[in-house]
Length: 502
Image (cartoon, rainbow, N blue to C red):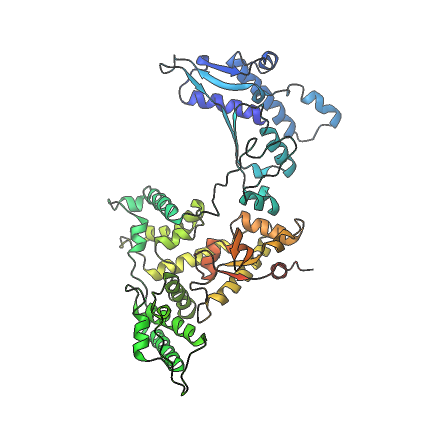
């Protein structure tokens, strides 16, 4: 069926660009006279009809209202001895078409291969690895078709060696989404171009008569600020911490002078709160009479890194509902380098902008509107998960998200901008039975990007496997998109979270 449909597709594609099939010749492998006659390769009309007969015979059989008896199958499939892939090397088009002869390499693309039964998928995969087949082959499948063990092997760029095959020669596996070497800057540029194409066809925007950029619209929103009441609460807490730390005004001012100059007053207060909490948790060096000893070490006057700023903003999100997920860059980062997911998240913002355009209002969304819309969209997407084991995946995401939120909201922000992943020792993951329910839950969580697996990850002299929340789950849980921060745990805790512990 695959070979017949592919042959018919090649012929239709050539006709679609104006090629007369009388100008086409099928080039086959040497010494293939009998096989060439079997598919009628010398006559394009007969070649097409042979493919049609084959497709028709299989189609009639598989769509029969009542399946024939097994001993009757031979009669139904008498015309199905058909193997053009085994002999075709090239398709040659004569110079009569556009002035010069062309020799084309035929290609078969099998999309959505995960729809096959696992046994069928394995058979097709093994068949297409045959080195005797000369045409180009490309098979696309979701991660659904792989179990957890196979998926981890793909991430590590390891092949399952089947008898008679050589990894890297008979088949090359390519991940269309690079989960290891993510280049967010490159993806942001791609997302910006996609967003521009997304806006162009919409009549409401087109009537404005000017070039529209989603990036420009989203990034013109003014940064949010805490209310006077919330800012007063934060500053009062800072004053108490200054007193507990027995710090002088000059010392606090020196600390705040190390912050980036572009942060707003409320962010500055939140960063100071983190730095004072860190100071409080240190073992202070004090004089005999209790006054703090002078310490002008470089560590205390060094510049505060950007992740601490992000951590302060996330803490204000959870404490005071200060908007965080606004601006084009954070929207793009939430997509896990997946264009479909980016469009899904961006669609809610585009819908609101389109409504404003229709009503003749300015095309603008402030930070609070963006944040609210994107978080609601993220929550709705999680609620709409309907893939296998989706309820257990939600429990897993809630468990990991809760642990990460607790670490992110610790007053001293030990990981600066917090965590968004759950780490277990890689040796524990190696011991996970592929038939265990948790293995199946993780399999679908990874397949549908509820989680992203990062392994091996070296930290603290140990080798970890990190289950990082996907971009949608990160937004729903109010966490950072930065990679590397994780909470430590065990495989047993993961099993317990989905209700599969023994």
